Image 1 (tube, rainbow, N blue to C red):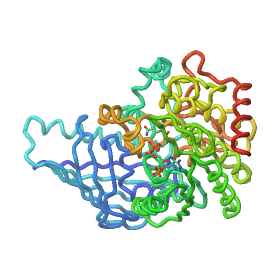
Image 2: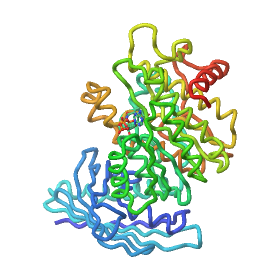
Image 3: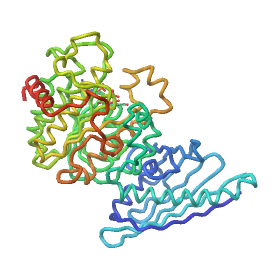
Image 4: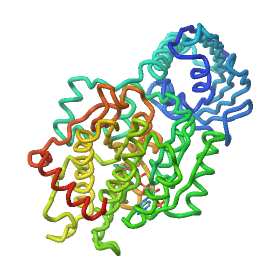
Length: 465
Ligand SMILES: NC(=O)c1ccc[n+]([C@@H]2O[C@H](COP(=O)([O-])OP(=O)(O)OC[C@H]3O[C@@H](n4cnc5c(N)ncnc54)[C@H](OP(=O)(O)O)[C@@H]3O)[C@@H](O)[C@H]2O)c1
């Protein structure tokens, strides 16, 4: 048996309650500890003494499963966790102390016990554990304090210009290279409306937003799936305020009805996340006569954003339009928005609609400065939508796909971080992994302002806003 004690102490520029609440949910370790690939809370509800967590530890690049249990939660004072994995146990003790109103002293102590370690490996373990401890503390400072927009290194800026090599960053490996991955900015007292919450990225984003204290307007098209989503969100975040709204977003009449209801019933709205989206293998028109990819991915989110604009502007709110990295491969085809010319290609139709939504986001950022207008793309994440619409891609890429939680990261960060709100230097943009990205990389794919204005006129005509 080998015992390794490790102690670190640091002062964080965040109030005590923020630090304690963030760390009490040990599933956030996946956001700040480089020694953890993934972490999930397995006990439903707010993290309490007895809550269990399943982790995938990063042991010299290998993924090793470990189980943790929160043993003590002494509010704003102490957290004690007990963990075990193949051949080791660990007890983590975190002691918190306020340093005035705005700062917190954190003392972190880990005692690891290793069974049957070969003699030649034993001397390596101490320096390895010390290094991990340092990296974890650096990660924690980033998660709680230095979690602003990412500045891309030159190497990555060059890679993204080459489009296909840049797409390597769309994988989970790309997510791991992100400098800061913590989601710790509280949203108490803010209302966030999000579409497509019944699966995939929207559900993951809603869980995280609820953990951060947001009051959530959950938009879905099916009552049973909406009820199941609410349960999943509560299991993840504990008690929270959830307001379900039903709408079929391929119908502009239904989207319009949703907007009317929200305007009538919700006095405040801080963030709208247009997340719902779909890619169809076959061409199809909606009952209202629009090609359905266009309806779901462009016409409906545009209508919702424009109708809710006055509500959002009153609160200096934010709109986050979820697009796709696939748009880098397509330009806008303004004279064939419904894809009537040539054989239908679902991925092209999808990319063109997303390209259109990005162009409108840019236009509206110029027109309405009382709102922070953002578009983002999530990389490639394993979701029911990807499995359904791109089954071959899903199968081949499975080990490389991001988890929904990782794919939703930038969405939640844009909804919550002060550095991207109205009045900040980054109050609008096109984002991937918390970094501003170019709108277009290939010749002929950029949308100039007159074209975006023509697109807006057409989308407005169809949406009746
Ligand atoms: N996953 C990725 O790798 C990836 C990559 C690039 C971009 N994106 C974008 O990210 C967003 C979320 O994608 P996802 O992968 O999480 O997709 P998903 O697993 O298919 O989930 C999509 C969500 O949108 C809802 N939705 C779809 N069509 C709708 C409609 N007509 N009316 C109302 N709700 C509708 C779905 O509701 P139901 O449960 O009722 O079907 C579901 O809640 C989309 O905008 C997608 O284009 C995803």
